[in-house]
Image (cartoon, rainbow, N blue to C red; front, side, top):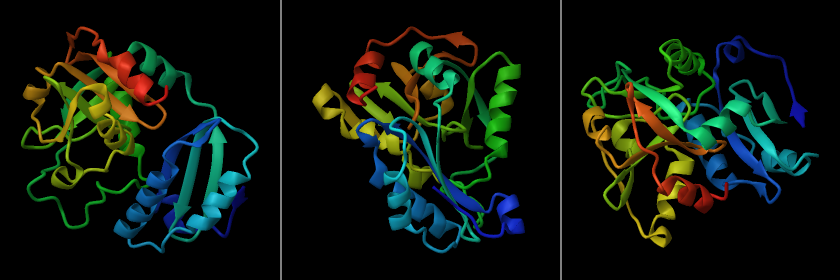
Length: 249
């Protein structure tokens, strides 16, 4: 279902929010968590609250049962719910892993600007994809952004998860001022049954390079193992297939 009103200049400038969900035969994966984040992102942008019931209704009316489900909501009230095929690159990254470069985002976790939208999933993703294109020109697949203090933040379209001994870790979103990662948080909630501990903690880029394993997590990827970091190859982790299985991939 697509509902449209007159597009405002703000819509053309990315003044809105979105969510991407993995649509499975069993239904949209982690739907309520994604809807809650959509509401939270709208609040950060000082937008009207999204019409959550209309979104649920639009999803229930879909004629397909798998793919990449996207919900877009703009300040002027445009609502779009659509499904597309999961990109082949996403499937490849899940299967083969990713080569990653670290890069300074120019963002400080100690004193972000008061207008920062870094904790919201806004439509302004042009710089995110520009970062991935930059990585491709360097022979890599993706980027892990660092703060000006050297702390790991996130990837342009994914959260960062790593293994520290027997503890599965991710970056604390509130402390780092980044978007909360739904897949990452869900994965950590499953760590106990897998025999692992779980923690949210800050980590520097240098410390990350010494982690037992590193993954990028997102709704469509599930997780993609980092097989090369800043040009240094990394051994594949036996935990990757186990964690993918836990996530239902």
